[in-house]
Length: 214
Image (tube, rainbow, N blue to C red):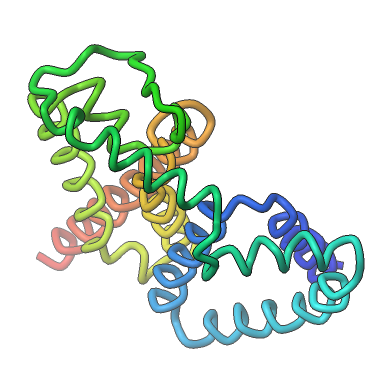
């Protein structure tokens, strides 16, 4: 039953047609799998294989196949309207965004005929904070993520490994989404918070054990 629900969940995920979410999932798995112990890696691989048994037949059936295949093929298509529009929007707005020193303030909306207001966290950040605010803001986020990457907690606890992977995968959407605000922002900051709490917990546990040995 668990594998069936996993298969249905992945099918729903594919039907969302959100390529940014697909890329984020791949980034998360690349971060998550190597951090697991061998036995957990095998369990995950077996779970994915079993889930594929349910997913593949459904994906090859109509009306799923046309929708999903068209979206997958858009990754390599030079006529992809969405990707071309994003590239055009970046070309139009990148220079004025880089010229923002103090920014235009919180809540600034990116105006472009080819790029949505939530299609780029980088542009939104530069327009809102300027260089003056973006540098310390990004530095703080990178320091948090660097701490999580170097934390041994992820190698001790699979749950912590998963929360870290989710946080990093969500932030990886920065160039194609705005992962720091709204619902997706709750995911990012929530899982960063959980991962940092686990890091501090295991750090305190190691300190306590070291004191007991003395």
